[in-house]
Picture (tube, rainbow, N blue to C red):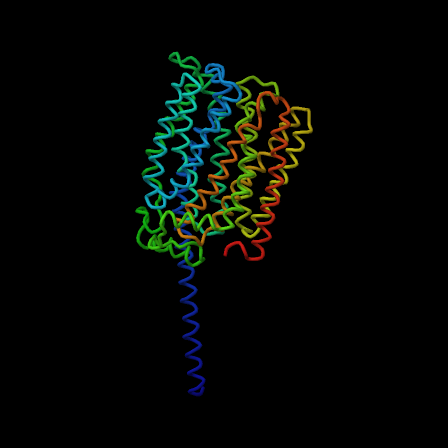
Length: 463
């Protein structure tokens, strides 16, 4: 072998060794990253899941309390009950953006449990209301306190996970709201029946006491479980914090560095000037506006001829089907993240068709089945629309992302204000106006998310 051949052989050998070393390094990094993601999941997902479940129970228990005797005891008219519903969302919408700006500059492990303890206390106080005005006042305060939670969770999830990891996590998050519907119905049925008259207290009052106390208890535990942001979380080692930040930067996911900060006003201007934010607001308002139907499930099911307590339990299958559809959608969507818009439009089409059928059908059992699948479409769209927005806003600074996500969530929930008037008791049993409006909103949502899908396919959405 000539000297030249030996030299080439040595270079080839050195290159081969370097390739092996690079492969081993990549495998080691991937293994470390996978272990880190599991650790993040372990700390974040169960904690946030139960916090959101209790949050949703506390905001929706008024529907169960209504048919368990609250409306009669407080002598509420249909319009007064609707006002008690919407006043929560008035304060909720107003305070979401300021709350998320506060969170972006503070520690989630302190901020979120603190507001949860406070709204749990106020929920317990609702057991003592003696008038319509007292009920409205306390619902307003609960809205102020809960305003910081949902958009805060959106910010946290978008700060820890890559684009292609988010749909499953958002599906887990939303599944808490879905199960809280089933859980709330079961719990409400048990409490209002078994604790009725205990210690001279009506069952619907016990409902507020028990569920408010549960929120306070879990918030105290969550204080020691929640993670902060990637570079500041004390439950991770220095190497893990660095990897948590770098893995997002590698995918151009977010400006994870805490050094990049915008003032509150500048972050607000940046968010409101972004046309993508407004498209997601329009789409999410459609989904949430249609989902106000959930507040009337007990009343709608009661129209099937079931007594009050049994009507509570008959809402459970509605949420059970939605839970499985949401889980499947979240898992599948992370496999094809570029098709989120198309998947949302497909689910909204299902909900539209079911809403049309519910308006036409006169058989209560058929309407119940259609209601089940309409709900599944709306909940599955809800989770996916949030992950779609989060991944689209990924390149923003933390402050701008906080404002954008809070603004989408806030304006989406603004739809619940008029949504509370869609199903007045005098429209029973067909509720033609309510289902007709839902049909129109679903049609609009199909157009919005269809357009977002087309824009995303052309590479114009993440700019």
